[in-house]
Amino acid sequence: MADSSLKYERQREDMVRRQIEGRGISDPNVLSAFRKVPRHLFVSEALMDQAYGDYPLPIGEQQTISQPYIVAEMTQALQIGKGDRVLEIGTGSGYQAAILAEIAYRVYTVERIYSLYVTARKRFDKLHYHNIITRYSDGTLGWMDQSPFDAIMVTAGAPRVPATLVQQLAPGGRLVIPVGDRYSQDLVKVIRDEQGVRQASLGGCRFVKLVGEHGWDD
Ligand code: SAH
Image (tube, rainbow, N blue to C red):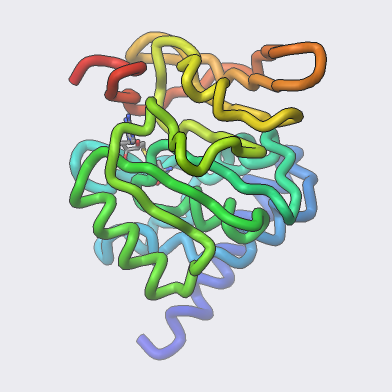
């Protein structure tokens, strides 16, 4: 359809107004990133018409692209500046990484399922996200060679905060991670500063499992 991009642009604006701004997300960088990233291009063709809905969607391999609001909430919580280097664990569809890449200097993203890693990598190339660096590996170990990071986001639910990730935070760095059991988690924000490491809870959430050495068993 010749004007389908216009259709999705309208749906996207509607999503930003109702689901993101309407629920209190106010960081201008986050809002403008949501207006730019074409979420419908991060799901399969069959699901494109649902891409701007107020819910998560399947992306294959029993994984999901998160609900738009939770992506916004986690992004805002990281307080990302233009010069920041950000690590994301759980590339999935690549949507969250693209949102981060609109705001940050560079995004490093790790995925443990090969097919998802390859699909996301192709998407980044096609959409010209040249500041996203991808890696196929266990993200619970972080990305030592590229550390420290100004911000780290984990987009899968962990049994506890992996110490490896806290260690890879720069001074002043922020980490956002869902922590809990397999069915429900608490969104936890960890801040590393001169006084040490502080932790705060941002509320309940529900994510797929973080599987790896410092996560759940397969
Ligand atoms: N941020 C994604 C959400 C994907 S769901 C998006 O915007 O679409 C969570 C993803 O985390 C899944 O793709 C899952 O395979 C991945 N994952 C789980 N454990 C992981 C680990 N230890 N390292 C890297 N990725 C992991």
